[in-house]
Length: 123
Image (cartoon, rainbow, N blue to C red; front, side):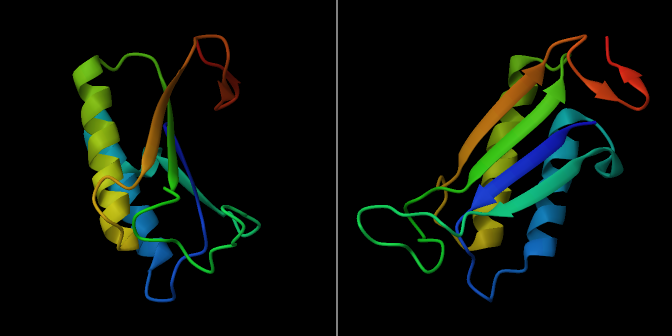
């Protein structure tokens, strides 16, 4: 089960967060070759962020990139990981009304024996 964690500054009212999360979920599922219902996406608003002596009221369009973290088990090749990172980042930026490329994305591959889910430790 891939897990996607998104952290970002507060979003303008016009941003439909549930839709954005669904779109990112679908992009990750497509990239990793799994079903959408196998991907779990979480959102955390960074509402106590201070930068350059000013606290942004909402997500700037070209700075303070949202953080997109994709956590998945081993077994994907470099092309699949690159495609998933790129696709999910483009989808998230578009859903939030941000400039293309304004997402900081990380792919974390979990090692066998280091994750417990579904009633057991994954090997």
